[in-house]
Length: 445
Ligand code: GAP
Image (cartoon, rainbow, N blue to C red; front, side, top):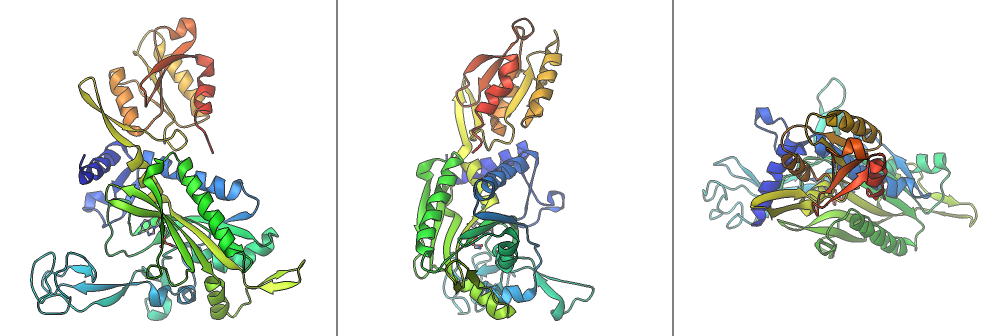
């Protein structure tokens, strides 16, 4: 399957089955903004829940936080985003399109007479590169003036740094400890695309770990290992995950060292999570800009210092896309193409489909009772319309791992047929054991 075809098929499946829709579609859509439908919202929630469980609930040394999207504008001066979060852009005076100056499709040097616009083909119409800030601006209060400008946060991390002392003191944690947060971030990306891979509004799952100077390299390595294990735990194909180490020219202004976890998408190896050793950059800058001391006092050692930070930063949307891409497959079954999303049961939006084989002989009543019972434990879907084969296929496309059919033998024998999505094998399971049968196979952590 050609790679572009795979992405096209995935986008179409996502719309058909209710994973992801284009934002404001009835108005022609909004560039690189997407909405999650009934199945997509469950998939992304499963990603976020698993992350929260692994990072916050399962650990004693990490606390959760939910900081506001709007922050004091000085935060973004301290963080370096006002001056440095920019891309060089060029405009075409002829067709009015805007490009990144390093867009590989541009022929020649922008600003020079021979430079050619990649869209309209005009020569000499591209402007010199100008820096463009990627932060979305808005105004706070009733007056739209420069003094009222606030930004939609381009990362969640800053909310953690400015709350570090509040969390430290209220939770009575000691260093080393971390703060984790899941939340929306906004970037006015110039070359967005590839579906939900790079969007202008997205969700980050970020954790900042505060450590004593001199122990940062060690913690950095630990966090690298733990984060890669987490991605493996999602059931992703191991050979499609790899590390990418940032060279000196790639390192962000705040980073001493950085590694990306990359996944092999149809459009190439791309970052899904970054692990950074941020050193003392963040607390140092906020201390300087706010004038507030952000040092940590280690009472036992009678030692005072500014903690260093190891950050893990993943995109919830990117991980959701990774799961979709990794799960998508087509198989030839009895002369037809079967489309399957082979999700790990733990992340599947719906865990089981419940079907009466036919709409008579007491089967709908038994199936409804079973559905109501299962629904209290995990998301299930009831479907009594169409041939049973078609109902299975619909659940295959939704990535539902189990299909449970109430049939002619159920009433007398108190058993149902459980059909496994991947192997399509069927087995009989006691009616009163179905809930446990499914629950045992969800592999929650
Ligand atoms: N606080 C560090 C930071 O924000 P980043 O590498 O810019 O680092 C971290 O972003 C993660 O956020 C990325 O690995 C990616 O998963 C996600 N991300 C960044 N920009 C995104 C975008 N435009 N659309 C979707 N996800 C994005």
